[in-house]
Length: 529
Image (cartoon, rainbow, N blue to C red; front, side, top):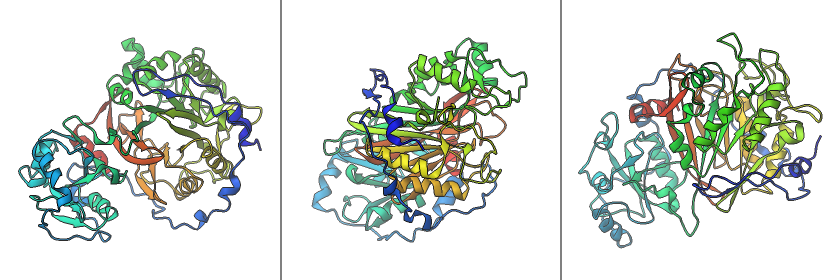
């Protein structure tokens, strides 16, 4: 087995980021001989964990805007401790009332709502009106359907003049309450807010972008499958514009300090377009990378089942052509390489003083640990890289989790991006959940997965978020709402802590071009989440 320090030292120095955004130093991890931290992982008590998920995936259902609210509103909230209000003001919070009455949010405060809330922004005068009942329904501030606004609070942070529906004894209980009640809203100190709730932008100001205790946030964007070829390629040719698929989402992606995408296919000037319109061999011109640059995509993962595997007999040539194109356009990549050392190498970035490492792992066409089969989402093939063969970074549990642990020695934040799961199934298989848990046990700050071509969900394990499948981003599947939609995942870091997650829903139109969702569409998307 190749030692981790070997492939770390081989990583090239990466190009500095676009100057219009926060400076990103895409620097290689050239720290010298890093010890392999596999021993720190050990047998790990994670193998004895209790799986909270069912092993049998329910059939995907067509979502309705209505059910995002009715389903959540009836959820159990046993961990919350409600107190019927009203509650008198406390001297410590009375200045915040004056600030609210004068419009906007007090400095250092945030409006927290359910992660499933389809409204992401309100006007500068709305907070006080919403908290005091002057505006009592979310439809008045942009929701696609009427449902009541319910102010809630922490027991040690109440403001006079507000009639609270519930008051919670702890932030943990309040976070559970917000998930259960999409109509609830709470005014909270920004320093206590974390990824379990959503914070609203107020009057164009996003509180999550504000420094806390001198630490400025870092915003990372992660998107799902970008699949060149077939109708995506044909539409770019028809319009004579290889940036066209990205145009309607570029402003969002460019707003992130760092953006990572899953490039699921090949970029080549030599491989022919398949004659079969239903081919699963995806190829387009390297000129498509101009679209990546236009959208501000900083790096791509190649750890997926279409980087090497195809039905045209290209073999590894498509991957080699893609790597050459990425090098030519100076786009960093991870999860595949000309040999196993390069395939295992993480991409490490320095963003505003925070070091972030991404690792890509192909657990679909290079899975050496899990039995092949449809239910497991594992193909009976082997395109994994070796010492003398190009390929993807294979899923070998002991190797993957050792790599995660070793990456924590050179980066404050380590995020594995696994390609795994069963296609068109809304819940990951049990082995995939266990793999995500073991990555957290090895030191990952969070885990992101993809492959099913639809969104799945999220769980919290050991206090860390695991986001299963952001779904399709650019692909020509138009036959159902589930496959022509997905989301751009926004990860907000403050130092090494994940303090925010946002799910920017996208709808793919005309077989190639995603756009941001409306409030009603976002509600339906989050109903499937």
